[in-house]
Image (cartoon, rainbow, N blue to C red):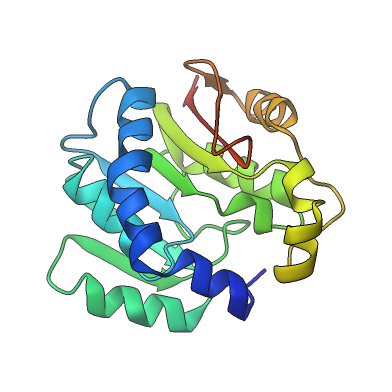
Length: 198
């Protein structure tokens, strides 16, 4: 599901970018137990390319493959990341165009809660990760999506949503097991965690 105008403005501004570069990068570095040096990382839902910048500059990945459902966002990411070791395309997290077991790490900067059939996206993430590969995720729980502010100003699927424990259980069902306790941040507006593939 594509972002509406309000959420696009919230997610694509200098404050959000600074937050990703500083706090979110630090969360993911801690969850990963260090940086992602030398790794091929897949970012699901790349937006305008800030996440890929974070993955390269703050987490030390060697190269990034990234996609987004929104063509206009992919074009912005292309301009932002020109000349960087990033491959960009229009794509859907429920049908990832990547061979099985070929990615070292998948990074989800709050995309999966936008997916109506989110369980399918977890299955796809598990498929593309190599054995021992890592998923780093930041997600929004059901209680936030059902809040007045989210329902009034953003567009999200309302059925079949998840809390952190349900998200973790679905990961485990696909062989992705948590590497640390899930952390709740920003007064419970999001949760952050990591899971490794068996």
